[in-house]
Image (cartoon, rainbow, N blue to C red):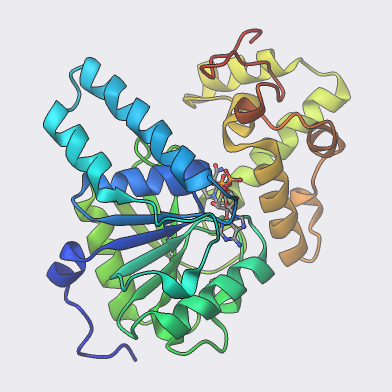
Length: 307
Ligand code: NAI
């Protein structure tokens, strides 16, 4: 069980946070935590990626100030709390002690396990270790690590500053007290936590897989073009985004990795099989908004130009 000397919610609220992986999700989670008042150590394996994410955050905050959504002081405070440890070599063993680590790297079990092994060895036993995985088994990420009870999933949605839902995912050995304190922490960040067990895709991704897959199969069948499918789902079903534009936002590569992971963990249930269209997009480098071209084309600011 979790050590009773572990931090209370109030101690966790005052502790620094580390975010490992400064891509779409990690950068956004760092922003959320910094806006909630935490000092955030943001790191990434790719040289310069964390610094670039901080630069982008600076521009985002400037835009929010211009729009009157945050004050200049708040923006400066948020940016000032995001720390990018120096040097281009990622050394997780050298991370300062923090209350919470959120891992948001590539969706691969071996990579995540190796990161958690280093964190479990070098962070104090009271540090809560969370993965932002969309589909991988939290039990498998934590298996055999010292203090497995403090490992859980904290699954944010894209983009983290705007999306309120966070799935708080319980691995087989996750300590209920850790789940509770993590849920309350993110509630304090303005999020809506929901708890679930670690089954493939958890709640949202399990339900969303057939949604994306069937939409892609409709395109393959020639039933309708992507823009028409998105329009139909937005207008009729009340979705804010259609499945095509949503997978472009997620990233076609991320979506393929998550879909494949759910498919493999469900004994290759055909409902979750990656479509040929999904694989072709990734093979062609059409990764979505982040590459300027996915199902649709995007301008430099990420606005669709042909949808
Ligand atoms: P991304 O591709 O934008 O960013 C991943 C980052 O991790 C990259 O900057 C990469 O350099 C870094 N990285 C890779 N291996 C690393 C390592 N060993 N150590 C440190 N950094 C490393 O991916 P994205 O979209 O941010 O996804 C990250 C995680 O979040 C994945 O597990 C994904 O399934 C999950 N997720 C993604 C969502 C989305 O809509 N894109 C939504 C919710 C969860």
